[in-house]
Amino acid sequence: MIITRATEYAIRSVLYMAKQRRGEIVYKKDICASQEVTPAFLTKILQPLIKAGIVGSQRGVGGGFFLAKLPTEITLLDIIMAEEGPLYINQCLSGEGVCTRDLFCPVHGAWHEIREQMMTTLARYSFQDLIDREGQLPSRNK
Figure 1 (spheres, one colour):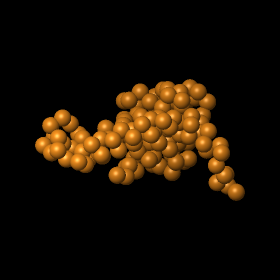
Figure 2 (cartoon, helix red, strand yellow):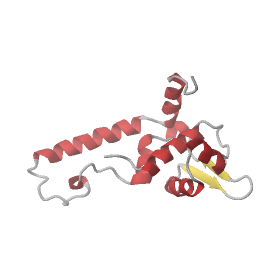
Figure 3 (tube, helix red, strand yellow):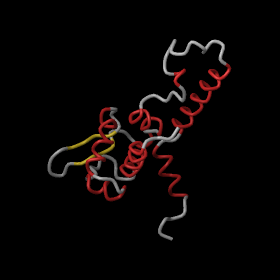
Figure 4 (cartoon, helix red, strand yellow):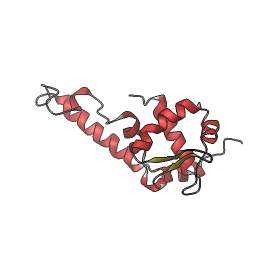
């Protein structure tokens, strides 16, 4: 499984906004320049995050985007779920009764466990954690 390009840009854009002062409106042009994304694509990828209550938007002069939650309250799982929907790993986990083999299939339980561990790991990484990690990495400009 590979996350979509939209989800990757959404994660990077939220990380960029998370590094700004709390409540600060971030101009679309600044996010686009810092993340090398077109304005139309940025608007498209932020719509699910606005709908999920992760990002807010302000129209008009001085408008832009802002985080609707603290960086400590937003996880990688939140962004992936907003952009991609639920993680199923395999079709057999997508709903009750979807797979007629789930009761006797030895792989079904493995898929379920893998899915749960993956979701737990993604939920463990808040955007504040990512900001803190970035501070420990070597600078890109060196």
